Length: 289
Image (cartoon, rainbow, N blue to C red; front, side):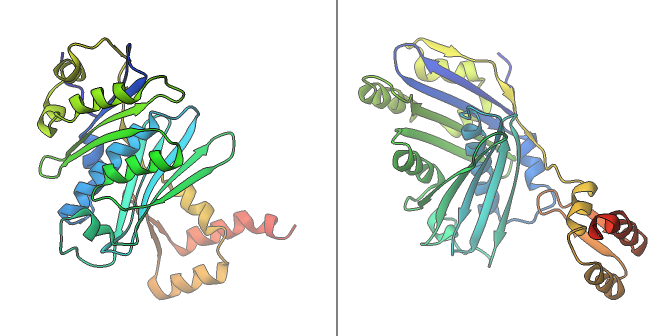
């Protein structure tokens, strides 16, 4: 079988109440990093965060979005990846200072939190938060599911900064599964033998055969994963309509133009005095009602 990058595949075991997923990212990961000057340790974390967000997005039972976010008091004080039910991902990171260590806990700090937000297109938003007490992002995700949903979960995350590729393997006990403790221990013990190179270079079928050739597995069709920012001039214009006209003109007087840059894809949207006057003219009838 040929290797398909930028894709996620779901699978389940016939004889175990466990579900699994495998994700590989290449072009999407490269697009997420493009233009940003993140240190390598942050690039690696973003690759892992992108992979796990894709894995969690595939578990959604609704149309909408999932946001996986890290907040900390270390050099990295904020990192987030957002994914849609259609596997469109975007992400960004912010630092307060240059990292001096490549260790996950040193990067995020001692008071870090993992925040996962589910936003259905129809329905109420849900947000879960857990303190990060593990030494890896995968450990933090596993703790989140154990604490918030009481679902045993194992995650393996890899990111190769030099070759701009990331991958992940996800196993989780099915809700209301029967006699799953020994089954879960069995399938996770086998999965723990996987290597990053195997996930990068082998097809999904080859990985599953390598790990579970004695098991009966149902493999579902692979789904494409892509980087998609979603920013637009229209969105920035809508934001500017909520800013007082005198504030916008003050910026124009000082800088000669008004420039808004997207944090995710770094696209610049430039507005001149003519553009601002046109925005004000468009919103004037609504403001006088």
